Each structure stands twice: as C-alpha cells, then as structure tokens.
Length: 478
Image (cartoon, rainbow, N blue to C red; front, side):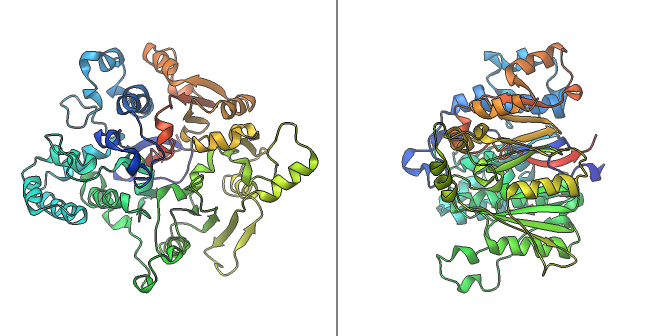
C-alpha cells in the first residue's frame, strides 16, 4: 500500500522502511588537508569501516526489517569469496531490499530514464566545474556506473573526476519524513550541495515516492537573503535533518544549530502550520559548536518515558571526581545555555518557554505520549566528567530506535552503556545477536529494553551515530 511507504509520526515506533547509504570508495579518498572542508574530523580506513563496522548495521537492519533477504545466508554473505558483493548496489547479488533502501540503488534506477540521466549530468557538471569533455564522457556511462560516480566522485577507471561526498552515509540529513511528507534539506556547507541535488532527483522521480510528489517540501530562500552580506549566516535558510524530530503525530522539534538557521526554523514552523501537519513546533536553540552540530547529537528518544541526553543541558550538575562546592558552582556557571520555545498553531504569538531540555522532554512524554509513569533520563558518560563530553563526541546521545526500547549505539561509549545497564536495559553486542538470530535462538519481536552495541572505532571518526545514518520512511506502531 502506498500509505505504508511513507509515514513517520514517532521517533520510536517500529521501524519498517529506512533509507541508508553504505560507505563508498569516496570515503577512502578523504585526505587530512581536506577532512574539515568535507566535515570530517579525521580520515577513516575504508575496509574497516565497511567490513568490520557498517556491514553489521546493514545486517541487523535486514534482520529486523526484511529478514527474508538475509536469514540463513549469513555464512555465505560473509565468506571471503563473496567479496562483499551482497552490499554493493551494482552487484548482481546485491540485497536489493525495498525496506532497507540503499540510496545508490535508487539513484541508479532513476538514471535509467534518459532525460533524467542527461539533466543530472549537466547539473552535476555545472556545480562541480567539469570540463565539456568530462560532461560528454559521463553521458556515455550506464546508470549503475553513473550513480556510483556521482556519489564517490570516481570514474570507472578509478580516476577522481570531482570531490567525493563522504557525508552521504548520513542519510538523516538529506531529508526528514513528517507524516506522509518529506522535508528536503538545504545544506549549510558547500561540501553537501551535490547530496541535496541527488536527493531531490530521487524523491521527485523514483517510483517508490510516486504517490507523494505533491508532499515533498522544499524550503525557499527568504526574498531578502540575496541582498544580505555573505557572512550573515543567521539570515540564510539552511537545514539538515539531524535538527528535525517528529516526536508525536502533532508535535515537531526543530533545532537551531551550527547547521540549521533561525530563518529556516521560522520557515519550517510557518509551513507546518499552513499545511496542517502539526499542532505545535518546539524550536530548540543549542550553541553553535562543532561538539553539538545538530540536536540529535544532544538527545534522542529511547522509549515513551526514556530519553538519552547530554548532562550539560540538564538541571543536574555533571559529577566531577574530588570536586568541592566552589568548583561545582563555577563549572555550572560555565555551561552553555540552551533556549527552548514552543509555538502552538492556535496562538503562535504566545510561545511557551521551557527552562531546561529535561522539562521539554518530560512534557513530550506526559502531554503528547500520555505516559503514566515517571520519565527517566540516561545521561551521556553516566553524567561523569570527562566521560560525558568524550562519549557525546562519539555519539552516545545519537541512538536509533529500531522499535520502542530497542536501540543501536556505539560499543566504545562504556560509561553510557553502564548507565543503560543501570537503568534496566539488556546489553548485547551485534555480533552475538546476529549469531543468535541466525540460529533462531532470538526473535526480534520479543526483544525489549535492549541496547545493541555496534563496532565503532572507524565509524565514530566520521562524527555521526546511527540516528544520523538513517532516514526513516515508515514507522508503524505494531
């Protein structure tokens, strides 16, 4: 059913369809001198990030969302002779799931249309400053080759034609599903311009979204933005999906951050009210720091009454070993501020102010999700200095809920894992869980209150967790 293909009204309802992108060869071409321009803090080892880390993400998603593609095949898929072809969209044995949906696979299908093929070659060539000779050469590529080149920047002969787009693995940022609509991003950084272009063609032209083309939302630039000084970032309209959360059927959270501007937040709020998509929008302004980047690096939801968050924005002081009262007070005064305003459709001129992030999250659990239990918080690094900051940097707060109470997180965040265990959650490593799923010892439908630990030595260098590496297209309450 078309209605089932695009529907998100929750951060924690059972995930049924998700958009992802496996690390491509472009990620292995990031060099130290360009890493920060391409929004990376470090260079990563491609084989490790694929075979030892991201491939486990693909496998666990398939077991939860599309088990017929993987059940009984684990040994075959992982054998050296298989050469990872199961994960490669251009391969004849690619998993090709319509539930765990690979972006490169969709792009290749879109490029089968000759008219789109020509238009996208012209568009990419223009924004990348390609020569006429290169543009003509790209026109001769078949759809699968061209899709791979557009994403990795690498031609079929391993020649680098233009920069890679290594951030494409963070599919959350290309757009966000709000009910049966898709809000497309407007990237703040030039390095992500091609991502936005490719995403636009996929959503407007792929058959998977054919019934929703009138439901695709693009944020226009404000009519005065062209006249503003180049460095007036606050007046630009820039948006990335990590700053949007659909926390209930009628409530949207919008972050104002390093990547999403106040102008964009205003535009989104007005658009949501005009289209009747939600009754309230809460705007959360966090410090413009690389540490935080988006609101989903500061908090995510685990259950209706459980949230994981960074203690810096908490009412509770971060615990320091051997500190005295004066030290604690001084530290509290140094904490960065967060500003939270909630706008209601019926009276947008009278916003509600929240003093702390915890107050807002409690209100969501009680007012929107009708929790009758006490709302609990699990803190990054168990709210202990320096682990709170260290583990937030490696995405302890950036968790993906496969269903309510079952989340994916990095195995390197030991203190946060300890906090989950103390909160009554079972802890299991993905490698063990996959073996149990394959053997039939575990049923995904029976899992509850579980943190699944994912290998993370290289993935965490890319500065994004599994919330970032997913764009849910459909979540169901069953």
